[in-house]
Length: 122
Image 1 (tube, rainbow, N blue to C red):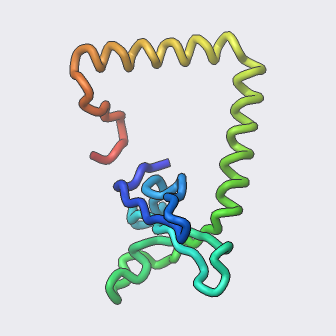
Image 2 (image 1 turned 60 degrees about the vertical axis):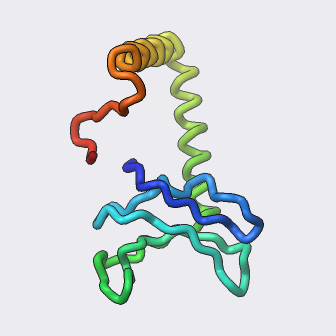
């Protein structure tokens, strides 16, 4: 998953949605913006900010996704990965420890500058 520029719109209760600033469009790379239905604020969703940006259609699709569906998908993925980590616990521990060691070494050498991985946009 790509990480979008940090833009965190507050919900009507003043709280920020946990996915705000994290979701991007698979087609155009624009951030997905958080919205809620004006008539029924319990209906929350994200859609592509490039779809109708200032009358210009940067993206051919709205890439609309409801928040309740997104939460179910993410929770299902967390459960799947938790089971996988439990099944292969020793291998998982080695991977986590190895990555933690790499991160600590990078921070020691470069400070807090972010690591750029192959294929990642700057």
